[in-house]
Image 1 (spheres, rainbow, N blue to C red):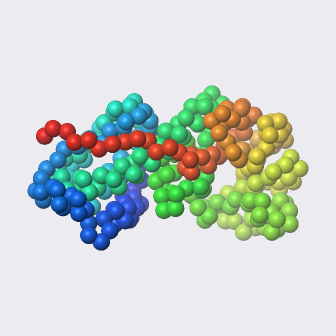
Image 2 (cartoon, rainbow, N blue to C red):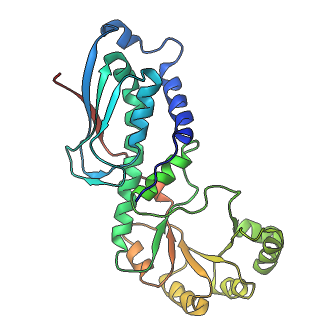
Image 3 (cartoon, rainbow, N blue to C red):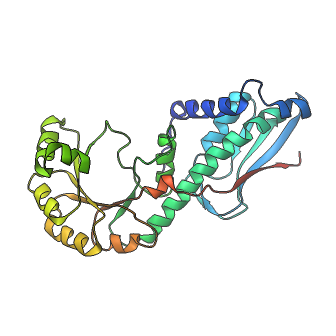
Length: 283
């Protein structure tokens, strides 16, 4: 079951997107062409197959403009649908629907695209023990929604921000002088609920990290051979995460090395928007 995000998290994003679109004078096209009391029924439909995510954005965008507009979800977040599937039907004030159209489509199309790409990666590693996770390479301001879309596609979330886990990267190591010293400082600082992860770029660094017992070790741009060796060296003592340039063409071989987690920045920074349209239907 996919637990939906609270409206409280989504509303500021939707409001900001609507405000950006409305500008200083509002929707002058709708004002000019559509009578104030006109009614409209329309369908949000997927024009190509994919995984649904972000339906609440439709409801919240319309509610900001006219709370009386009805939104009937005909699918659910996390559901894989074929092309031409109607995701939701809306009915009510025509001006409100037409004004909210682009904001709703932008958000839902983006989130469905992320969910769809995530499912492609998850399917590619099916049968292995590896999990597909996202990164912090998200669109500024949309992280909560984009990471939710990853979950809709069957992936899992990495840390949400700088404050919910310690992740020691190569530049942190450089500032500390060594992998071991960086881990030592992190463990001395961290509270008992905070995990410590360290990035390593060689088997030598991996062995140094293992000696200091971090919770997670990230194998950065390791070859497949080195990943397999890393799995042997770690011997399930820590969680191993593979990262760096992972693609649909390479992810299966990475998963088969025995790593626990594969982080894929492309899930959020390179997902293609799912083509979704709004089409009026007869009343």
